[in-house]
Image (cartoon, rainbow, N blue to C red; front, side, top):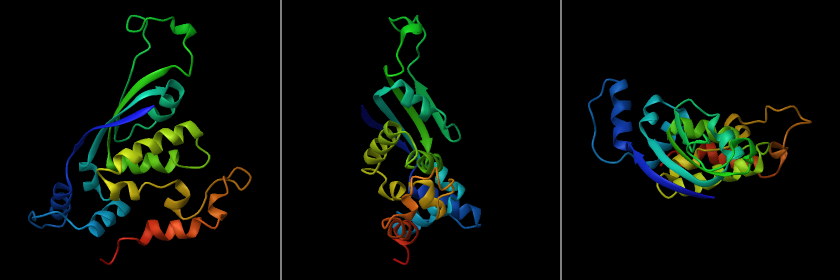
Length: 189
């Protein structure tokens, strides 16, 4: 499986100007500072939806693609069809492990939301791997956004799963430092 970032639409100046509009200010100039970007992402203010990413998973397993296509708010998926007129194989004999291409357009809010579910230790390992591969590619372009993409337990500050079902990460020695890093790193600059 390979991930390709195809396009990033919108920019942080547009996000900042939209935010300024919401508080009755005129547009500004220049690139907003990183700590401001992180604060906007953590607070999940609506202007972050102006940042849209278009990417493609190449040769992703069909069943992993099915997990990822479940996310629909702020997301537009395009997955290779299995209709017989488009593919030279028997649809009834197609394996769940068949490789497909899966293209997506999603805004920053949707990427944060998907991360909460797909980075969880209880998510299927292959699906978590596909999502991490996407985030690793996206980090080259939007490192602050990727820094705000965390599993549900970090996002909430605790694991909401029943104790017997939990992956137990929230009780590990790594949890509190990572929670602090997510919430605090980059503020006060």
